[in-house]
Every structure is written in C-alpha cells, then in structure tokens.
Image (cartoon, rainbow over all chains, first blue to last red):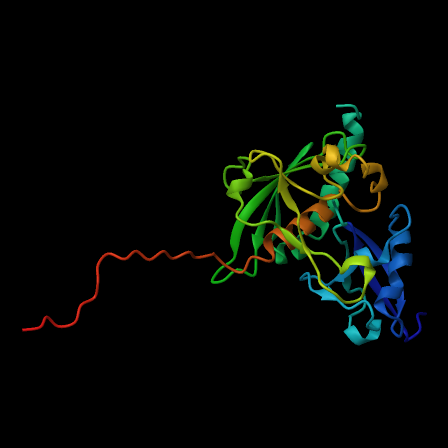
Length: 87
Length: 191
C-alpha cells in the first residue's frame, strides 16, 4: 500500500506516457532524471533543457515541491525538451 | 531512400499514436494534427493568445522518410493550400531568448531567430532535430547522431517547439497605418 507521502503521476515524455511514484515532499525537478531513464531517453539527459508543463502547456516550477501543486493521483504532466542552442 | 520504409513507417506510426493519445492536451495549446500518412504529416498551429481571436499563422508539413537515421524534414506551409511559404511570407523570426553569455545567472540576453533562409524560397527552422538544419553545410559539426534518441526530432518535440516560438508569441495582427497629407486645414476665411 502506498504511503500517504506518495502519489502516482503520469509523465508524458516525447508523447510516451510513464507512470512514476513521487514523494510529495521532493521537488518536481528531482523526478526528471529517473523519469527520462524510464522513458528510454538516450544519452546523458541535460536537465536544464527539459521543462515540466501541465495539460494546458503552462510551465511548472521544477523547484517547487510535488505536494505544493495539488496534483490529483494519476495527474498528467508533460516533459518537453527545450530547443537546443543552434548556430 | 536508404532506410527500409517498413522501419521508418513503424517509427512514424508510433510517433503519431503517441501524439494522438494526448491530442486533447495538444489542441488546448493550438496544435492540431490534420493528416498523418507515411511518410508525411500535416499539422496546423494556432496562435491561441492572439486577440481578438486566435490566428492561424502557418501549417507545417513534416516528412519522415528515412526516419530516424535522418531527422524529419520540416516545411512551413500555407495552412489552407499547403503551398510552401517563402521567407518573405512569414512576417516574423521565431525569436527565442538565449541565456546570458558564459552561463552567468544575470546579464544581457540576446535573441536568436530560429527561422532562417539563405534564399527566400527555402526558409528553414534552425534547430537540431530538423533535416534542413543538419543538412546545412553551416552545421556539419553538429551531427544528427548527437541528438538522435534524446527527444529532438520527434513529432511532439517539433510541433511543441513550432508552437512555442512560432505561434504562441503572436498577440494579434500588426497594424500599420499610413497617413497621407491631402491638403491643409484653414481657419475661417477673413472678410
């Protein structure tokens, strides 16, 4: 049984959904690397190039604690890769 | 073509399915995938923040031939006729702010135009994950294989970036009013 500190969230990485169990006291950004790994993103992820968005495309503050967003269990969060610096 | 079309088709169809699974959320951001028939996909992207009503500045035609040994080709097109747009037909630059130089936390920021063209007929998005970028001699040092599998070049990534830099910043039509002097104003005629 999941502890009351845990919440299941659905992250969408490049369109690919991944279910992640998160601790409500950890910052949202702490979920980035394990989520990308679960989604099979190749290479070393560059954390600064990924942004969290809600369903409407609003950017979520990755430094904020998971519990502070008031997500419902199973809420969908989109992880989007920022455009790289091109020359 | 140098990749077995069956392989590219399977990857293309997986990406389209991934997009469609969350199509409702993408539509809230103004991104609509209209057609997807291997190797091409056609989408329209609305400027949802434009007032007094959302605008439809462009469509995008993506070609996934040879995917993903090669990244998709991306062409901006008329959202109605799907004719390729010339650079001069797109009245803005898809600007993005760059972080301050040298990784400093603060400092002056410059803006990079993502939309570029060496000739008017062939505008392209200057971005990793787009075939036109990687095929440009100017980017021979930034191989697609450095980005393949990282998320760059996927259908959702490309439509998201085009929405963010190409459509979302549009707030409304630009109005240019030109006044012509066609006479002079005079006071009452003296007696």
